[in-house]
Image (tube, rainbow, N blue to C red):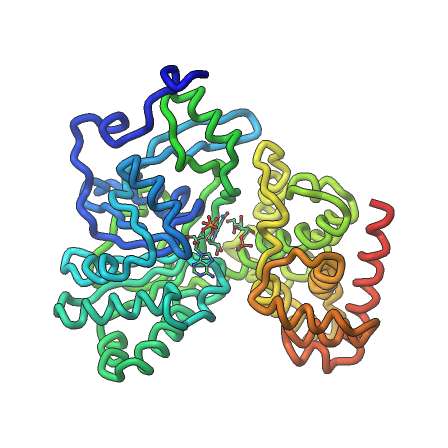
Length: 442
Ligand SMILES: NC(=O)c1ccc[n+]([C@@H]2O[C@H](COP(=O)([O-])OP(=O)(O)OC[C@H]3O[C@@H](n4cnc5c(N)ncnc54)[C@H](O)[C@@H]3O)[C@@H](O)[C@H]2O)c1
Ligand SMILES: O=P(O)(O)OC[C@@H](O)[C@@H](O)[C@H](O)[C@H](O)CO
């Protein structure tokens, strides 16, 4: 197609002619694929969407903000089911900003109309608190809100972390206390940290996805995002400055979030980690491919059997949830790449494998299903140098050892207690050898 034949670029005027953009009342940190398919989607579908605009900041580079700003913040969600695709333009993001622009972040967080800050900064980012990290930037912005006396605000973590509101609170308060104890006090008094369980499988957008949007929708959208039809958002906590009516879009507000987050983190994300590590070692690329391998599927089912014993039987419909997961993971039209899920294993395994392993062993069982998730990670990091992890240098050092010594050194990076338990060390070492050996037969 020549330049003259290219369809026009998507803009707010094309998507929502004659409609004013909503005013900024939410700020988001971590303008990635998931924010667009989830929090922005829920906000667009809230009954009071006209009152709630989002200013979204990138994490590490300006690229995603520049692209979205060229489209006035609007983008397409491609809902991809096994049967086909549907397309919807989302208008809730009204400002897209480079995360390094801390001055703009501070201005917006200090504005009295701003009531909510949401986060999708990845699990590993909660442990990173130095200058230029998202939570350090947030603390700078909260200091500006304190100085402006702009009132209370809610911070809502939407990352796959157990007790994500509490983790965010601890990290933010620690940074603030070190900078200025009075700021720490103000945050304790005025900032509510909301915990959430978030769910919607959203792989990285590909050039083919963008080409499809262009062809089907008649406009060019460089910021489109592809997601499964399923979505879920469970929240627990206070919103002292108000919030969008996300319940209109299906969000659920609960007092006790722990059973929901354990169900999601163990059954969905735990299974994802097993499929990622065992699947990559066995030569697969996507979740759907790995699930169709009987060895990977059996490892997932064994882990689910263990995890299910430690989830409340009532109200969570575990059998239905497991069946739905098999269908969601099996949606081969969603190319969810295992390499994306495999990142930051040391952080993720602590939340996905360790609680189930500890609960099983406390009841006198081996916990071999949960142990196999860790063994698969070991087999994966030993088979490649191309992993991303906050402890990558330590992993490389641990890999200089051999045999059980190497296994012990790697396990210690997840939890020192693992390496000190000789029976568990032997179990995981044997499991790792079996997974690595199977690699040659895959
Ligand atoms: N994609 C999904 O299916 C999905 C579903 C549920 C929850 N989540 C949560 O959302 C997070 C983001 O997922 P995504 O698909 O949007 O990823 P993404 O890579 O598209 O975007 C992540 C955003 O966080 C920033 N970021 C990444 N690592 C960072 C770091 N170390 N420090 C600071 N900023 C960093 C990036 O710059 C980007 O703005 C996940 O880590 C997970 O916790 C994702
Ligand atoms: O980086 P992660 O592992 O937290 O994210 C990758 C996927 O496992 C995850 O994003 C799931 O798709 C998501 O949690 C589904 O809601």
